[in-house]
Length: 207
Length: 166
Image 1: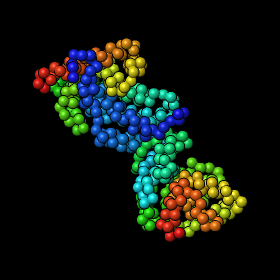
Image 2: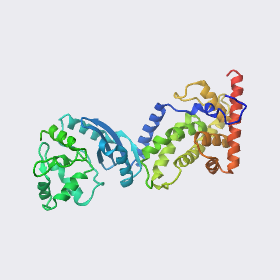
Image 3: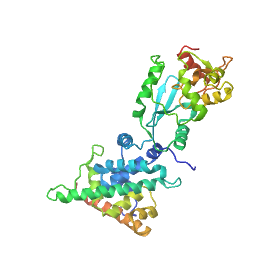
Image 4: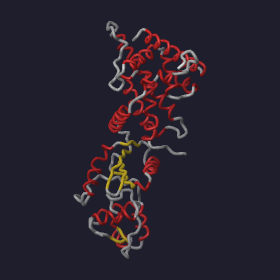
């Protein structure tokens, strides 16, 4: 380093004392998570968890669990979507998802057949939300048809709309749209892919 | 891109830069408070930030305001303990353990506020002098001069400390 040649030369060495370690950055992030939650400005907290069917993204507002997303949905685009539809005040903050992560673990270990979590359905509305709210009544280990579900929610002719409601379920697994099949017993679509739908039904002993 | 990205990505992209700026301006000891207050305040008002805003400049501007508060507190504390012999030696945190870092911060601390700010916001914050001037007040040329003087003084005091065998 030539000290006399130009004042700007070597300034980065001179200011190297400011370079933080990864540990510093992580500690500050945790501190921000806590203070944001305390100040009630953490509109959406999220985390990712590993499960037998792959990585899941869990996101929650202060009201409850808002979104469960599969890796194939593209986790970045799911977060972009939440920023647009709910709020950009989003932080990775696992604490708010502790209970959900715990119950999902138990579910995959076959130690849980119903979920006991506060849910925030604000990503869906109208008839779709009505159908989604109904879904947890389809008991673990059983299945229902789109047609049967349409009748159960009092709109026997709205089979296609019921299908759309299932396909746009923001809380898969927790809200068990995987338990809804075609009338002929065919699998039907699934946001996480047909293999995941089959896995969940097998786990529950319904396939 | 007419939408706002999740704040987590803002933290991810600017966390290190803002922390470096804070360390350069208020020292390692108070930098974490400055960083935390900056990002909490930024998160609070993030939805109102115009989509085309320069996020880095916005964060550094907030950090500057937080730093002013902290420097004011540091000066009050310094003047209330003038009898203490080691008033300039703020102990480095565990994360900046070396005594070299400590000396560099001492050199940095001895700079006039404007020079220190100009060095931090331009060289560490990566802001053009136009933005630096907006934050510190004064003209773009004045900001450029303050940064150049700051670097020159920093190098001089640090070299002096080195040659004294410190």
